[in-house]
Image (cartoon, rainbow, N blue to C red; front, side, top):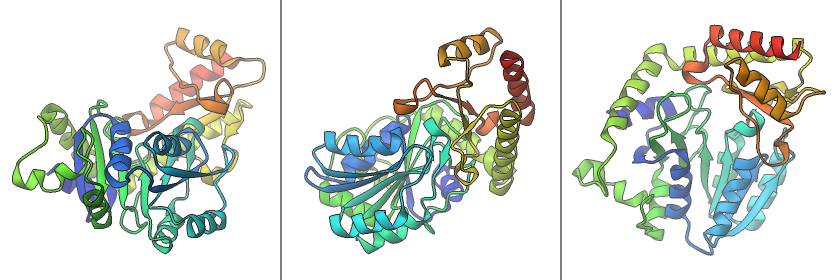
Length: 318
């Protein structure tokens, strides 16, 4: 039943694997299952998680190239196409929502590029699916990666992977058999023979979370997230806080990133907000100490909650 509901959420007819472990387990499982040491991986990156795909591949002994754009931008699509044709990767990786910088990346053209290069397309939509439109099949995504803890507002107990027939063929070629392996799940649920005892409490919670989301309706959920995100950005701008990224079309509906205001350090701002009972996120890598983030996904995509948060921030900034 969970697989059926996830197919609706992710807009796919592909099989969906649900494993114990949080979202990062899905990333490791996809790479280890569908790539062997020496295989070629092309990572499309404009942030820590996009870059992280490449670093994970290097750690697993793969030949890796990373197409990098500055945080706040997306790599040039034609540059990606040229690199894919020249490099002939076995897999292209990308992140839909790059949470450290509040970016919602346009992964749509990557499916066409992956087909031209005869590569698998692996997309991390952990922080977007359910709060932003995700069209797994239409976009040509072979491995769609999800966790239970973001828009579904559950505990970080489950990793979820939508797997295409092309990806299953790659998994059969590689034949990886570790804990995060996808292959044992290919027929495991059908045969009721699982590689380990599942987290059935989390599976029950997942069913409830999916039912709540689909009862609301995907389009209604997208609209709710977009409305709250727009309000958040408008309030920040009215306070003189600069939004990051500056391109409105790249701003995520599930998380808003902003530059730490002049006269403040991240540590000072974080402490002042915590004193008033409000927690926000810092950032990573080159944005550490420069950017702070306000999450508004799932149950937190609530106008009253975000309004209260903005009121507290406005009070703190004076």
